[in-house]
Length: 313
Image 1 (cartoon, rainbow, N blue to C red):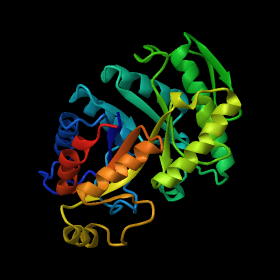
Image 2: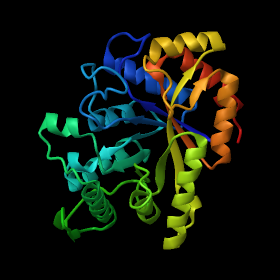
Image 3: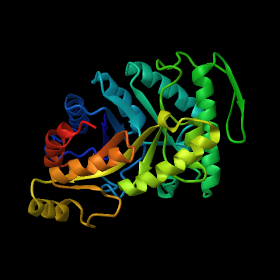
């Protein structure tokens, strides 16, 4: 059956109280009650221009995730995704293990190579311009993190990172380790790395583009002798929903000033979205991670009541 995740790209809620933490707590608790399988936050230092104003309130991912774990009981939690350049991977391994315990084994570990250069520069982090280097750093960091999660003591000497006879206790609750979602869809390196080390991927775009990326992933899995079905295929999309086409047009003008961009698939009336979710299921999507544009309450309610409730694929 299709899983649904909520990707929380903004901490501003139209019907909220104005207390950003309390509103976010209410948001995830409602998502859990409404049947969402997962809740994701972005690991950025401030809001991305594509989602809102850079000046709007924006919580730190690895601070708010344990707090959200403590006020929920079923929904899975994660960052989509944590860039390798923001934290020492040994430290991040410890943070992840702690979150897995606080959540009772509900952590999804989202990890990526990073790439939003203005944020690095604003916060004084060195930025490696070559994507191939950032991807090599990501691979090393994952090897180090997995080593710390699964060995009583671990030594690792890489080109970028190292640990020496390091101890990490307690180990994560999930065995053999928490599921690792590797972000990115680069056909030569990233999808190959997912085939080698990932438990989940986050493919991108409309169903036909999703299918092309999945085919590339299948080829990499075949090359390394892995069953592609063992990798959870997630995708990210923005949802904008209204009961009629006229209402939808007005909502697009209000919430999407640049219009519907090519990657935005789930924009429509409930009946159209039911069909589109079905298309994602037919091309092999396991888990749709959704951002409701502007945290629009009507879009959320319509999707939960008239789309999620009718999907049994």
